[in-house]
Image (cartoon, rainbow, N blue to C red):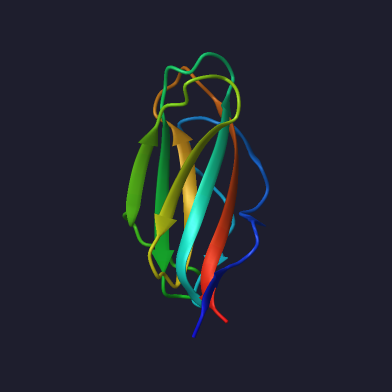
Length: 122
């Protein structure tokens, strides 16, 4: 069995006006993946002072997507500039997940995109 990385895939529609209310990218079914590499691309409305809080939530329910109340993992990411700033991380074998983002404070709002690649057997 050989493993190969799939194509760069969008995690859903760009999220805009990200503030202290958490917004979510699309639900991702990674049930066939051994690993998933995720990339968050963020832009701030000015020189960033508030970090972006990134959280990954899990579910086993493919029908209603009854999401866990607590995040599986959480990152705090402070972009260095107003340009496209990236945070990349790897998820282990997961069934179904989604990523939420919000601003850690009231000063900054963000625009963000998410992309991912899955490592699968061929």
